[in-house]
Image 1 (spheres, one colour):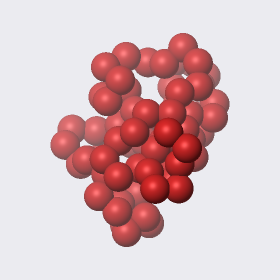
Image 2 (cartoon, one colour):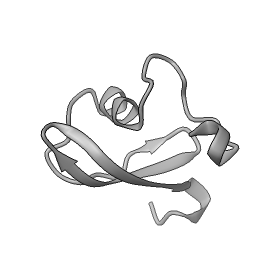
Image 3 (cartoon, one colour):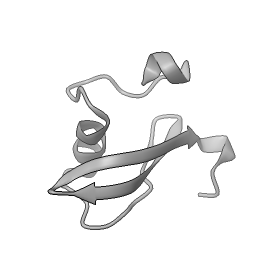
Length: 65
């Protein structure tokens, strides 16, 4: 994702967008959330079977946080 966004999302332990959200929240979200991670807001769009299936990512400066 960093390559596609030309950005700097944390690259610590997670290897997937789902892992990044779960690592940041320290749990699997029950409903859609919009955590700010680094310079970006990641909006979860679909959560199914304890996995974030899809999400939307945009820079913080474009978000209404």
